[in-house]
Image (cartoon, rainbow, N blue to C red; front, side):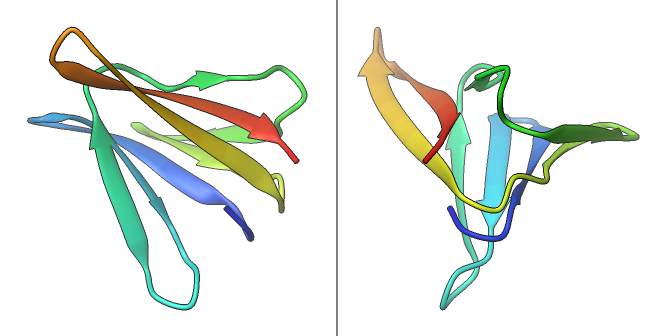
Length: 72
């Protein structure tokens, strides 16, 4: 993910949205695990990732999907 991302609670879980050549999003079942070296800001009910280059890892487990966010 380049240029940051936003995490919002939704009826289906947590939506992670970011901009690329096309806006993209993915919904996961639990709040993503964010490494401590990733810069974040709380904005109301949303978490903004302000680090400019991050890696998003998705893992399917027990019928749900988990997300892990780390710096590149």
